Amino acid sequence: MTEKLSYHANLNGVSFRLFELEQLLKFQDKGYSESRIRNEVLENNAFQNDALSLVDRMLPVMIERMKAFDFELRSIFLQGTINTKRILNLYAIMKTDLLFYEFMNEVIRKKFDNDNLYLELKDVNVFFTEKSEQSEIVLNWSEATKEKLSERYRHVLVESGILKSHKDRILIPQIIDEEIRDYFITNGYKEYIYAMGDEGEL
Image 1 (cartoon, one colour):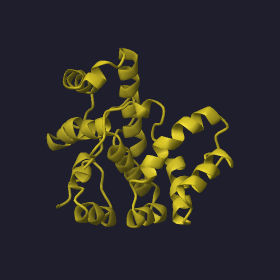
Image 2 (cartoon, rainbow, N blue to C red; image 1 turned 30 degrees about the vertical axis):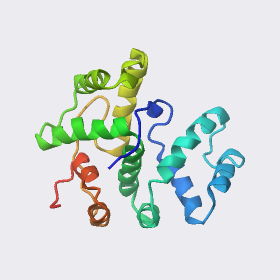
Image 3 (cartoon, rainbow, N blue to C red; image 1 turned 120 degrees about the vertical axis):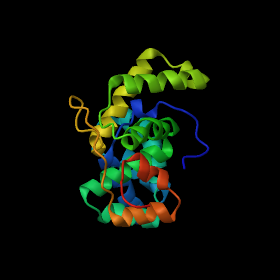
């Protein structure tokens, strides 16, 4: 479960970023230290992005996502299919972003449980309204920040394969590979499986 995190709006600046996560995990797999990984990104342009100010803002968030992977899960990611990588990238975002984790469990998982496979814009808006009532942090965000986060949440769902498209807001339950399912079950992370709509026996 996502623990010891406070709400933040990092997804407004750092969205799905699958390519960038893969680069970090490759460096980590080579045994690079965190400082060397930072150097590879900032000095050698490992993210292949010339907007250095964006890379500088992105890197701390991506480092935290990288840390969500232990040796076993990193190996599954690096040897996996593109679908496996998308699923595990989604996990890393959920693991490091408490508000998005709650969105997945309180909105998306509930829809899967109720066989309601359509995400309406109002579903996301209601979620942010409720969180504004529960959290002073979210309450103090501007409406523009919340609207952008809503867009980013939907973008992450599209990129991960859970949402068909921004236009056709059909939710697609994920079929999780057995190796990934076994990892999550063994490590007590069943809630991530449920939030992705996996319908297998747990």
